[in-house]
Amino acid sequence: MYTIEPNQDYRDQSQRQIDQSATAALKADAATHYDECYNDYLFAWCNRDNLALHYGYWADDKPYNQHQALLNKNQVLYAAAGIQTCDRVLDAGCGIGGSSIWMAKQHGNQVTGITISAKQAAYARQHAQRHGVAALVDFQVSDFCATPFPDQSFDVVWALESSCHALNKADFLAEAYRVLRPGGRLVVCDGFLLQRRFNESQWQAVLTCLNGWAVPNLCERDEFSRLLTQQNFQAIAWQDITAQTLPSADYMYKVAKRLEPVQRLSQWLGLRTKAQTANYLVGQAQRRLFTEKLTEYCIVTAQKI
Image 1 (cartoon, rainbow, N blue to C red):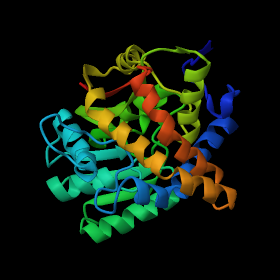
Image 2 (cartoon, rainbow, N blue to C red):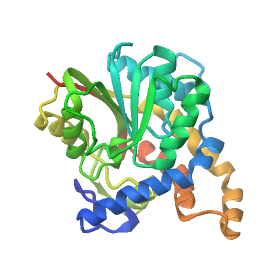
Image 3 (tube, one colour):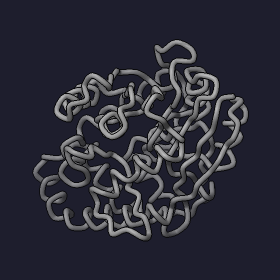
Image 4 (cartoon, rainbow, N blue to C red):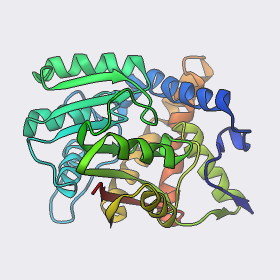
């Protein structure tokens, strides 16, 4: 049996010794992943309107397509956090600006997006200009565990499939608490472990996902709630949206299967980087984490009193 413990980096099929250099390497690997896979995401997953590097939200009573489901995820989180137009938002792990641009365009929010990738920040600025919201959004290169912002700078901290990249999730939560104003809200949407022990086959699927998405580890729900409480967050609320996420997991799997001949040929010709190939392999592996009930997918909100 294999076990995932908190605050460890399990990528590359071995537990790493955690020190400052290893943490820097983790951030560099994540930046490389998103830099090298930018065109892959735009081709196979999102588009230049939704700019979404995350799962969609497929409501049971509406016939969404992929584009609509990706955009709908933003609206679901926006409502869950009770965001108002006057709220200043920190998009912690903003990717290429999708959620930030959506909030500015649809609701007029002032949004600061941060990413550890300089290329992502540059892409996000270009997309914001193209969408006509450059005056409302600001994209910066920063680690969301150690931002340059003064205390109490934001009304909302938004983390859509980004907190998983933190080696120690408590570091992210402590920084989120620091930059939030009293009464400010945190909204996190991510995958969470349903178990910590895995057999050989399950472990390989888990490692494929961690490696492919440059994620060091995942939390359990109870563990994350405990970390929130330790950071003095209150009004903690969970919403399990695994069922609304499964259609996205199925969509990703089907896309990966369709592209398998292209991937094999491109890899054989030396046209795919290590990060691109690892990202492709996640497409087939990630669905198992849901169908075999190894993970759940949730929205968690909390407040700084």
